[in-house]
Image (cartoon, rainbow, N blue to C red; front, side, top):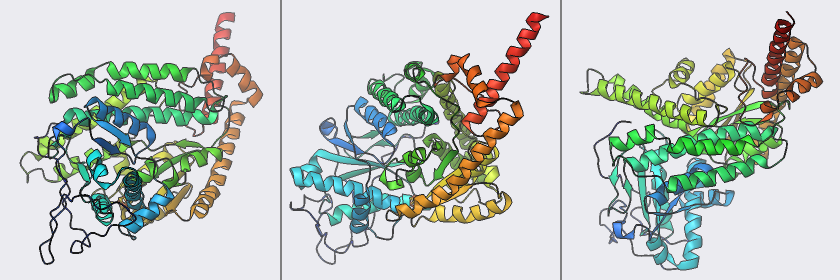
Length: 552
Ligand code: SF4
């Protein structure tokens, strides 16, 4: 990891659309809390929102609100914050009611993830205002969120939050923005919140560990013999890991030494070995034929699990599919790739660009190495991540690598990668209503499908009020994916000359293969059942060869 010079945390400086209009409380019985921005008289220039200081003395007294990811990583983030002496609370997963509240409180034309997350915060605070009053809410809570200055609305989320808070009469509420462009952003005003290197590393390790667990979880659940066992194991594993992050030792100071400790320590590896032992008890029937569906799309929609994406993960599983979830680590890797590209473009123009590009490439390698290390600790069964250079090369004919809003060229790259490497029978791309980058990638995919007509692609527009339409569209493509999975499996049986009953006999002689942590090699076909059949056939052949050797 590179170390950047410490600098103050970025705070929110936004001109709201109605900045010249006095804030208008909505739906709140309590009177507005004192504002962090000095009240203005008509004609006085607008003052951008600045959160009131969050002081060191308040640390441990004030609750940091976090959310908008999936529950596993949110739980570990909570552990990281508690480890730093904070109180932290996870916001409930956004609902359709939150979407409507977000549209009403901020901007009706904004992309649906902005509305979901804005509404989720606004509704939570509204409930708390009714319970304890606006002044107490401003005193007791602080919201911490990620932001950027990218090409899409992700750079304006905080503006939506601010507008919603103004409209709700909660101008005194404190929000702090974690920029995605620095790993050590120093202390937020007041020093109560420090976005330093150990905090960032804790967040990155939380992401990597939960990605690895989530991948195994989704590979296991569709094949579990006892329904509900995987969920039980994952819940217990995440509880354990939250304790591990809460008790994370502070070694190596706050700089490079701390990064080296994270990279070299066995602390997280041992924790993942414990998780592996939990998974080992799950018994699977790997000969269930299921289509594999790769989830891609906009970052929030592909990550969250709930109403914002029509519970698509669980819905697909209920429809008989195996879901290949989207790892957040890929997004971190992508952000670093963008930064590398930016520096490479300026070699010879900007001093130090070559060195910065090299340092970031090293950081990318260390990230993937850490991911590989955690996979290994879990027995090697979770999947490896795609290489960014390959994603970029695959997408290049259709999507320029410098178009960097949202997931940029990754949507095209990931769809092709999953298809060409036989990782999935079908791609389900979750496209938010009013999302600029996703609209571009859906357009680019039309060209991709012209060249790869056998790629099964289901772009689903998510706008909150058309669930039946979105899911039925997905179902149509899923029907074809199911047929493909079945054809593939039957083709494999014909190739190896075995029936399913014979395969089950061979499997019974190798009970260790029914364990959730068993590593079944990828034999160049997509489905779990087809790969398992080929693996069992190779064991039979090996067994036959050994018997022949013994007879000789
Ligand atoms: S990627 Fe799309 S949905 Fe996500 S913040 Fe940007 S514009 Fe909105």
